[in-house]
Image 1 (cartoon, rainbow, N blue to C red):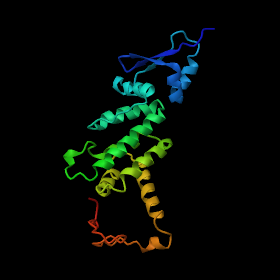
Image 2: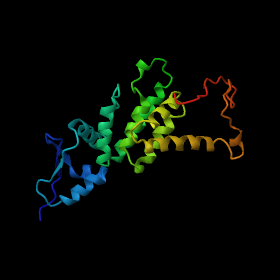
Image 3: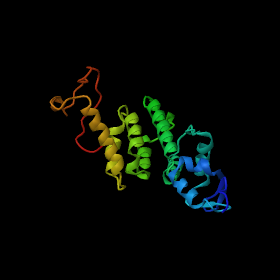
Length: 223
């Protein structure tokens, strides 16, 4: 019986671009790849073919495997970010998914107070969140909730975006559930069951908590 090869060759994309990765490194980070490694344990030149993953996305995976490094681009492109995230989802790279969403959430929070939307490095942040949720499953709830918890409380543009995206033709059930869960938990964590009834939908010019200026205007219909 042959000894397992220390390296595995991955043929990525339609062009079958070869990537050589150390077996132990690959298996340690992903159950998806660990299963492949077990099946190929006796092959002299073990090869895995992944035609639906792009070279660029997998290059990020490899960098994470060896360097534990992920850099959020200075300007976040939705398609590019989701391409990498989709690759991480499909290959069950749980640690990379978590870091990607953590860095994204931190960036969005920093840009919340920008007056000029042209200065945003994460344009249309809520659109991107819904795209990410669309690539995820219920097993990703934990890391997605951490993202929502970061961006939703301070995101002043969320109200209209939520209605627009919730009424789109695409299915956003997971994203909508995450947002509703965050909003409900925020209310439940700040007021007892008796005091919740004291909250009013009628608008006021002052915050009922601190007395500060309140800019929210009640809508009579969808924005």
